[in-house]
Length: 411
Ligand SMILES: *Cc1c(COP(=O)(O)O)cnc(C)c1O
Picture: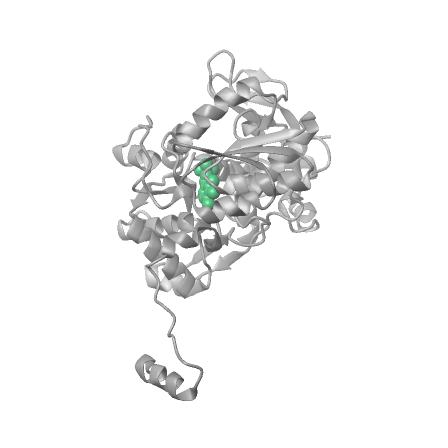
């Protein structure tokens, strides 16, 4: 038995039964999963959570499934790494990396949302899953869908990084590369979803899919010994992860897993696609869609579905936003790797570079206990560093040649 009460419109509050639907018939607002927190409060204690296997299902009462989880049993519970060397460089006392570059089978945080989406799609009885993706979702649905024995239709912008295309193809899905950007792909998928009765993880399954992102927030709090950080920096594409981290903190307070919620939530975006940060900087909650142009392709959503709600969370929590250029993204990827040994994809560069700006501007204070959400592995976007790293020292296979190089390197 699950603890879900039903779906609820975020705008007008109208309630709906649990079905593969995502939009309110009356006001066209997005639907969200509503839970019976009173019931959850009685069963989900810190001790209960600590006794469970270290994967994302240790918070299963707060996930929108009815039966046993059937997907993503090895996803989640990624490390929270204390990053002292990096902290010193960027001027913070206490800094942590929520390291979603590792542990997940497809090496990005999308394995969280896909675990929930596919478990739910199977509960609904679908035999085919589909998605519109900026890259990581394609990889994750391809992999987990294969393991779940589901047919897969994956739609991507044709201009995606080659490594992400190859990584997805390895699992044998139907990969559809569309001429156009993510927003074009998404528009097409809405039409496809009207005709084909598939579980589109980010369309008709979206209310359930999005809940998976909450597990990152629960883990951060558990790993900080049941406290929220003072500041958290979150990379934004559609804005969903940011809103769900906030929801996870609020839920933990609601069911008594934490006493206090004091956390400023910050959005990180690439300047070449920063509709959410632009709204925050202008102090408005209307999102102006943009045409993406950035190396951070996994975040390149010009018309973010949860942009409006992300701006609300940022305002309510006292946070802010920052946007960074492609060279700043590359420098940050290298800084994180060189200080902490963590190789992040472009989205990770966006997060760290944005954090550096927010520290300089005083929005994040030196004493703020800060968490950076690093959401994907650098091996997935190696292309981005081409021409921006040094070259190996090339030598002949003899000591003389090596000593020549040593003389140049110095000690
Ligand atoms: C999808 C994604 C995000 C955030 O996506 P939202 O749509 O804002 O939830 C962040 N980082 C990476 C690497 C992603 O693939």
